[in-house]
Image: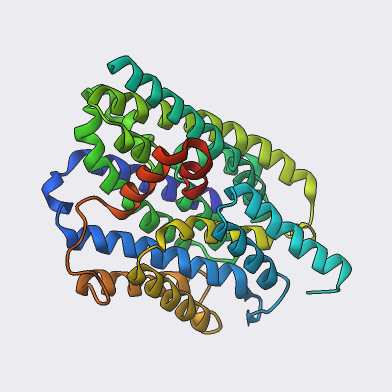
Length: 104
Length: 253
């Protein structure tokens, strides 16, 4: 499968899921359990992605400038900084540590 | 009275749309850093149009995963179906409008709609936010992608760290409850532990089982669950509290 195939497949899947919400009877997900499970699935996926994006690399686990950068971003989110500010700050911290402090 | 409520829906919708669209810039640049070209990046924003899913897809692709990227994007998109169920009743789109309504059914449009006090304002809030973000997010994606194309080595600019930070930002507003925080911590540790063992993209998917198991068993959870989905309700309150600043900063489309 080429990257284009993957992009189209993923896009169509996400779009189809959105439309599904308008098609299925609402009763199905009005109960607390499916709602809670869906919300926690989202939390779980995002947390897994945080870990993998922060620590992932060629050798499995890689400890580098991303870790302090992500900690700075988390601190900014904690004080309710706008999304783009925290993300840009993370990039700046990692770039600076690599340039100035010789981080990997 | 009614016109005032509708005017407020317009105001809230537009301010959330502008703030949310701005970080389409970061998506565009990060997508290029992940190895997608400009057209592929534009296609994701136009056709997939769901921030969390888009970031997940490019993240897994960047780490060398293939079909796992599709699975991650689809699983993160599942919550949109939940939003669709409540928006169907709130928006009541004509049949011909359902595809469009469905496509712009995301965290923010749902949140702004639910934050309005009367039916007409809810519909206005949904459409203004959804269509506004669609236009702004796609424009910002193009700008970000072109910018990313000029930047060269993504690590030199810290863009790999920015990608990780983006997920922190998407996760943060969902961590208010103890149960969610515990699930997040366990999932992150599990995904990290699986990194050296499983092929690219798979650690995230396996770690997602934590959320499903805790969700089904309600382990560590409150006895009485709220009626509204956590995301929708939380974001609705935030969007209402201070429009652009918090409501949009919290979630992705």
